[in-house]
Amino acid sequence: MAKITKKTKKKKVKKQVTKGRVYISASFNNTKITFTNPNGDVLCWTTAGSAGFKGSKKGTPYAAGEATKAACEKAKSFGMEEVDVFVKGVGAGRELAIRTLASSGLKINSIRDITPIPHNGCRPKKVRRV
Image (cartoon, rainbow, N blue to C red; front, side, top):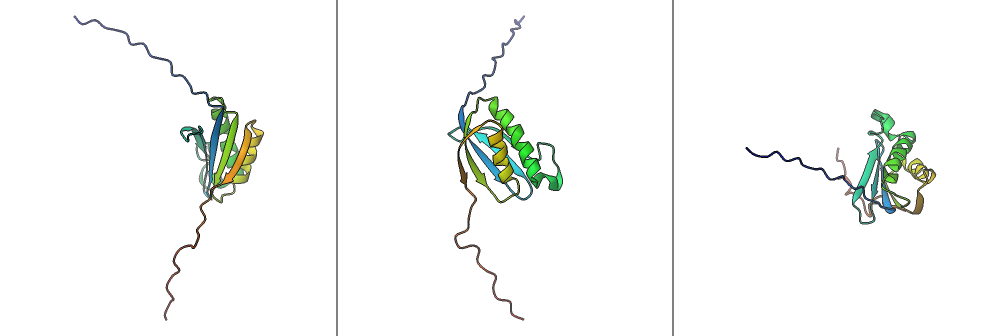
């Protein structure tokens, strides 16, 4: 008969990252907060939808603040202390998300706006002939 061997599971070690980046993507419909290490590898993320808001309430500043609080708690479990903030989009939650980051105890080194801006825009429609 074959012997039954017991497999021992190794305990997963959580990464300790003291400095990282925060990407805030604020659209009209939702707000996403992503914490990464300095190389850009994602550690944790949260959205206003995953924070419990549905429908048009996801795009509100309050929902963005609550989502940011939840993301900060996750990031602090990795040992996060200092962050560089990158904001993208024109949604209502972008300002409150940054304020919530500052009030949660994380040190903000820099804030950059990386919203894409068209340099010439789309080609205009052709002239309508009646």
